[in-house]
Length: 234
Image (cartoon, rainbow, N blue to C red):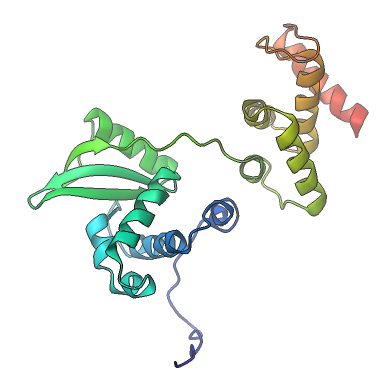
């Protein structure tokens, strides 16, 4: 078999979101899924127009993808649908002249809004008539995903260990809400998020969720309390 000759000095490139190399790479363990995801982004990047999507027919007919999975259309179909279930892709079942077709969008806020409009009949998808919008399985973002999106810094080994410990110690909804609170207060640091979680555990949440000592207090006082807590623990 001939070896790869290398990349030319100047060549076209396909952009991939940074989360592809962290959260998605961690979650997608099936090689066929990974190949389908990479090929999907490649095909999507070459689409024109304001609304860009890829159909299942296009995925199945792609010669490079077919060769890479040993010619199995069932493998491509299953892997693409699995990506939709993982919320990497958004899935719409539509109808054209040739019958029903599975249509996929990359999962971004813009496409989320479009799919919701399609669901409500407030938008169209020529030449298709939308029949159904598939509801993906509900999946909470991992604590590492939340950190990258909310804090926007590189996860060091020390922070990574602290995130793993926090994931085991606190409920997933607490962690998600703590990151949201840190963003809302423009206090984008793990120290601040961690302080929120520790205080909720010790004193209870503003919404009354039990910690060691559940109570309701003034939200503004809670904000000031977070800041005092961070300074005291730093």
